[in-house]
Image 1: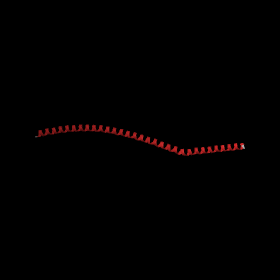
Image 2: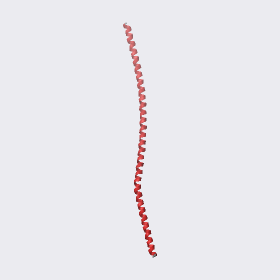
Image 3: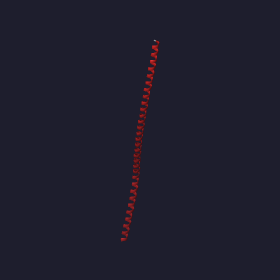
Length: 114
């Protein structure tokens, strides 16, 4: 009977080992099934965060570039405006002198005639 008991105990131990292995396989399979989508979700979220960071950085860079271009254009426009005002003043001054000179010449002719 001892051999029979020993064989039964060995068989029961073997069955328990097989049961434990099956449970471990099931646990691994369940973990893979549950972790797989979770890992994919985490990867998707990380990619989304990275994309948003890059878009935000690109927007900031574009805004800085736009601001720099606007400032440069305003500066150039101010320079052109100053030059135009200066040219306008010179032309008006020259015109006034010419008108004054012509008026004097006309006045002198009138005086001669009268």
